[in-house]
Image (cartoon, rainbow, N blue to C red; front, side, top):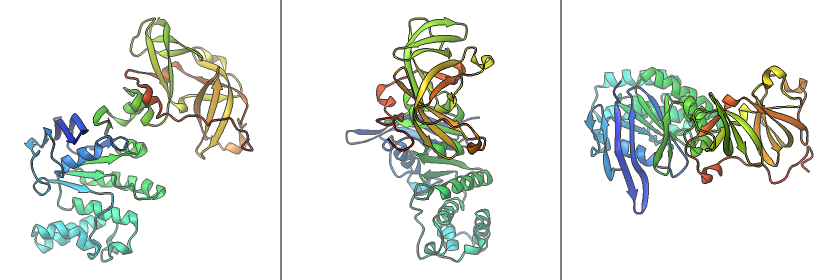
Amino acid sequence: MSDFLVIDKVSKRFGQLTAVDNVSLGIQKGEFFSLLGPSGCGKTTLLRMLGGFERPDSGHIYLDGKDITELSPNLRRVHTVFQNYALFPTMTVRENIAFSLRVAHVPKEKIKESVDNMLEMIRMQDHAYKYPTQISGGQKQRVAIVRALVDHPQVLLLDEPLAALDLKLRQHMLMELDLIHDQVGITFIYVTHDQGEAMSLSDRIAVMNHGRVEQLDKPAKIYEAPVSSFVAAFIGDTNFFQGEIVEAEGDYCTIDCPGFGKISAFNDRKLAVGQNVHLSVRPEKIRVTLSPPPPEKGAGINVFKSEVTDVIYQGVYTKYWIKSSGRSVSALKPHSRFLLDQETITWNDKVFMWWHPDDGYMIENFSESDAGLVQTPPDAPKGPNGK
């Protein structure tokens, strides 16, 4: 399938700051595509160039085979939904949705039909004659989205549209957005710094850092197989292990990590003995038990005697900080069973932590500064009474 929206070697500078640095992307028609990254990474600047609100210093943007780089916003069929909704306060919900159709002098009968369809899609028929001040934040956002969709743009840009909503409402609106996208079938480009939003909505994600795309792939691939330490640390949480390969046989190798011990890992990069490697192991891959793993699971499994230094209960899971040979490691235990009936692990318990060699992933591009993005343990261990 050929790309519907093409960003070709686009750069944008503001004085000495390079906000977007030679970015090239291809986005398919009907795709839900996310630009994900921390504040200042260039994602919003790139979105503004797609919308026509900024001009690239170099490079081109093509939509459906047409160069739109120099077109003003009103001449490209690309609409934007902003974080602050931007609804007209003196217009009703119906009038807000109809605004662009009225400006385009669409016949009244067609306007009514289109607005009715939009109201039905977001289930707000009963709120059609209310003003923005009379509806909730989530309802305002739904109105802003369908107002941008009512005249059938080719691309909808969403600039952190859920940032102003509380957690429960954001979670609900994620489902609403996914449903709306499925119903209208146009290309959505979603800008966010929230990894959970991007992972749950997107067909593909471009992870941005310092104006560049670090990784472009499907959500599962980005999470399970990050290409850099930045992606591994920014998407969720992880543990980094560094060492030298001392054995390599078949698909697996043994890594000697100074101050920690030897780790068995899947050698996906086919590295040889003597080469250095950085390994990422997600906290949820690490099991924490009071007893060692059973023999049938123990073959080839990485097992380390450890001590619990901190316990953080989060409802759906408990996070443990565990120390082994002076090294702190984070692990997550999901609560798939009724917790109060289970044997609990608490502060200062002697435990075993273990994981399968397949559950670590070798990082190709590692930076010490990226390791600072990883959550770190509390300064000092504490007990159940906070002491």
